[in-house]
Length: 552
Image (tube, rainbow, N blue to C red; front, side, top):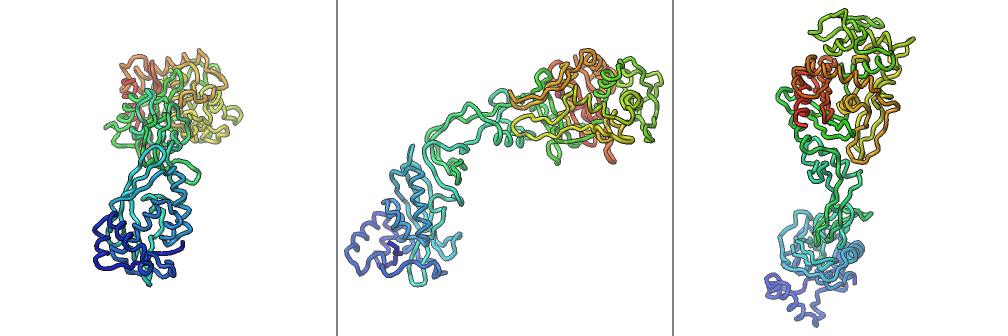
């Protein structure tokens, strides 16, 4: 029935149509149904989209056309309804898919009225109405609208658009009713308490979105209702819920209380709004308890790859103990400067020369020249400077980690083929050595826990192991030295007085500025922080680390 409607009634009947509602339409239709000379359809004419008039039809004519279309649709005369549009073929398929997808039992329309000239469809009159659909699971009501066009010879048609089925329905999308499809309701990514939504923390919103996309949720139950689905049946948006399902959750290792502390710590007033990043770990398990960051360059806590400065002296000391057989009391003369491979190195201001210094003493005051002298002498052999890299990989687990759920991290780097001055610079965390707060927190955790536990953010996530566990001897040496740093060394202004704390500060040169580092542990956590532009580790990262240690 490829027939468009042509209005054939005027005067009082037209007025009755406009003001009388659907009941009035039924009356008028009954009055004229036996009169073929003034039928609602003209068998000799169909709507030609190419001849669409730029003048919108009157409200009365547009309402009549819309009602004809809606009556055919609600009466399951889908072909007739489709031929009331300017795209019968497309409309016919879409109307059938609407009925099938919703398992449609009954469809009614009410409050059909003109809203004047359409702003979305040029040359059309907009007709609004309310839809009530009995579908699988319940009754769904929603407001909708169509645009009615007229041709230059007076034919009328509903302009077909996917929004006729439901406002905002996009290309390739359709409607479904019954069991809500996967994706219609997103999983909730929560802290280790099972309830705190990670999206409430500014630093974790991107991580939560990634986990929601890649991690497997648990504990959910499916609800029923109406949803928009895409071409492959995946849920796009839930439009109506008939029975509430239980939102599945993705449980993480994040400690909600400590995360809140970390969010505040990276905004500490002492930092002067400098970009900062911090990570806290449970050193017993490797579970990531907090990740927080500020700045415009993304998550520098787990992806900000920078030279770690003197925090690297933890790994340098371990290499001297493990590979050269030295002890904390071995000589490590602290001079004002030293030349290695034709490059001159100096100490930070305030470090006094001490020719009789030991490794432990040099570690306490963070003397660069001591570690360059011993490192270059004991750990570089015939131009091979890979010993520091080997220690980091074999004992501290340096490598390409996956913390779980597709969350991206940046791998640390200690090149095996360091050349020239970099062969010496690496021992003080400069040159081409790079790390993240995540890695340096893990370094402290390895020392405190006497063994490497690869950091993870999802419980049960696979954890890589280090090829060789740290020896009790080396762990004991490092714990003693880091404790002294916290009580009377470079970290004492921030960590002094805290029970069971060990730490190591770092100040790394980068271009025309320095970055401040501090990594530390207590009896509960290991933590590291980086502050870009920090003058020293203790006076920048120190404030961040202290807050986390005192609230763990």
